[in-house]
Amino acid sequence: MKPRLLWWLGTALLLLAVHTDWNVPLAAWVFPIFLLRYARQVPVRRAILMVGLSLLIGQLFWLGVTGLLFVLSGLLAFTLLAVLQTTAFLADRLCADRAGPLRTLVFPVTLVAGEYLFTVITGFGDFGALGSTQSANLPLLQTASVTGVYGLTFVLAWFASVVNTGWTEGWPPVKRTVLVHACVLGLVFLAGGARLLFDAPTTQTVRVAGISPSAGADKASSEALERVGVKYWRAEEVSAADPAAVGAAFAPVTEDLVTRTRQQASAGAKIVVWPETHARVLERDQDSLLKRVGAEAKQAGIHVELAYALYTKQAPYIRNVAVLVGPTGEVAWTYDKTRPTPMEPMTPGPGTVPTADSPYGRLATVICYDADFRDLTRQAADKETALLLVPANDWSGFGTLHAEKATFRAVENGYSLFRHSTHGNSTAVDDQGRILGHADYFRTDQQTLVADLPVQPRTQTVYSRVGDVFAWLCLAAAAICPLWTYKRGRTGKR
Image 1 (cartoon, rainbow, N blue to C red):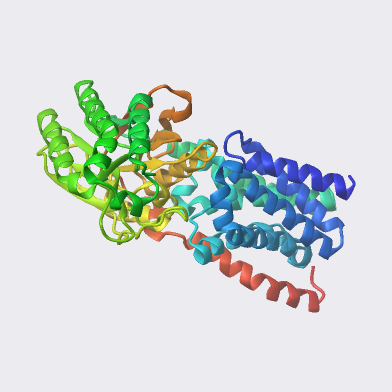
Image 2 (cartoon, rainbow, N blue to C red):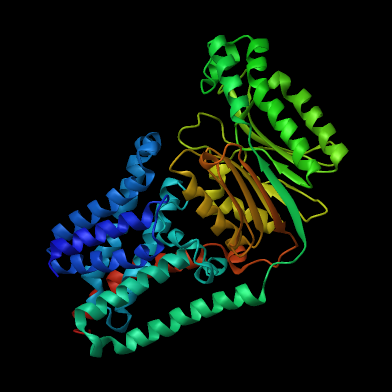
């Protein structure tokens, strides 16, 4: 097959693999094969340039036009990710042939090392991890309970490396390698299947409802803000405006959410979750809102996780908060978002994940983008959380990505997770990654997600105890690889 065709096939499959709205998980297994083959057939400089171009196109493509602001703010970061991933293809080209029986491991360890370095250097979470494309592959997904998402990246990259090596060298020289790989891959899927079968979640469940305001309430609030002449995303402008007029403009949404909270409580929900920042509250109105919701919670005997943008009089004039009100009517926690996106001009919270005991197990929360950061979600596991609540706010074309990542957090840490997103995809998953509820904001007239989630004090997963040890081992192996293969080359070993 001609190099040019290999590049086009690899790039096309890459785009299918990473685009979250219509990704094809199988493409993530296949596209590295063609790009590895291409990198081995063309001069090194061309391989670096063209493979790097493919990967950069892929990173920007999955963000899409709707993520333009995010692309602009993170362009350098995602260029770095493409460079780090390209390094894995270059390492395969330069080092694999000198690595002897371990030659098929050069690409996977270097790719995992690059993806992990990206998270350490940029603070963008685990964006771009190849393994995250496999959130629907339940047997393979269980690997995350030991290695995190990077174990899945390793499996996919090793498969591509083995296939490419067989393609290059033919069957006889690699048959032992192929058999070893097939056995290990079979054990991975067998272990995942056994975990699904023999460690099934408890039958003890709690009904959780995620609510969003109606289109009518949104429209009424928007029209009122227009009359006041205020843009809600300009926090300083909101804080400087007439508080009575702005408070009245925000009221249709909060009133609607309070009403829907009452309705879901009457329908049997024990926990009600509001979406991130869809409600907007002036600091002066916060206490009265919490008292109203507290009265509703006490009367119904439920927990309510309110999430809203809180406008203050001090710079940066806005906080992104989640407040849990318990069945006593009292506030159990107030949490400020720890990891604002590049588009959120607000002061981050202190980074401590709050917890609260309930009849259904221990509850915890983070907000939206926070769930992309494993250090935060592992805090919840360390505190024996049974259910993590994640109020969120996405945008068209991007919500699927965050929903998929939330699945990994549940499996990695061994708890159920309820992610309720306005302007995106809401999901409810158990600790093994089964989707027990899903709602798409853009495909419903009124987004409401109701799910019965298993809750119990879970035995900590291996990953929740050891963290990213697997990624660090890959990083160490990738660092040693050039020195080791150079030494083997000097002594004439193959």
